[in-house]
Image 1 (cartoon, rainbow, N blue to C red):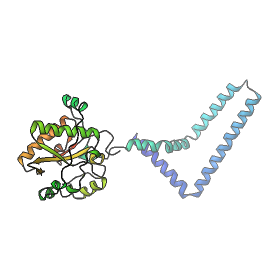
Image 2: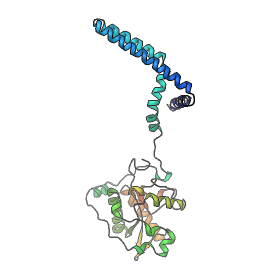
Image 3: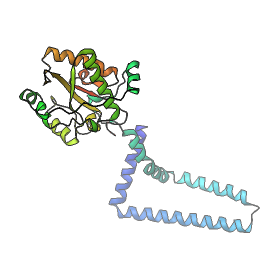
Image 4: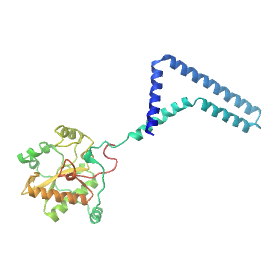
Length: 279
């Protein structure tokens, strides 16, 4: 199929170049089309005249006209192949080459969701917590690890409703079962901000604009609160234990955890929906 498409495309390009560069070619094509049109018009006129004069021979004349049409198509099959290629190639090429422009870390995969968790998601609707003071996200310790965190969006209303409930449920389980208080440090991310982060290097992100679920409100970065301070450091044993638990809980509610990527992002979770990335 691919070789056929390439061959048709090559013929189409050659034909277009021939017509564009050589005026004689256009004259020849116009003359051929005009001649064929006149012949078809004469055939149609003759057929109509015979139809008026004699209706008894209509089936025979239809068969004769069909035979002539078949012979005509066989004699000029190259022209019809080129026309068919012009009509078929654009949608066929779009279908063959359409795909998801995704970076490696964002490949689609399926997770087994805990049935009890799924039942909880269908029931109680959790409410986002009130926003924290902005200065919590701009301390010296935080800025050293996340230089642009102070300007990040933490607006729960900008996130997908389904993703919001799954993330809130994850926070609730982490708090009630594992005694870890979690907060969102970045949710929705504009395309411009995504590109700005990408320019800082692959140690920050390897996704450009619209290659991240952040742009669709389906991803968030989170961290821990301990003694009234935001804790992001992965060097802290208590925090690393929390990240491992966080990944397990997030996956149990159907989210994907960045801690399993090649470039690990322990605080990142996302809800993957088919057809979102690369549409």
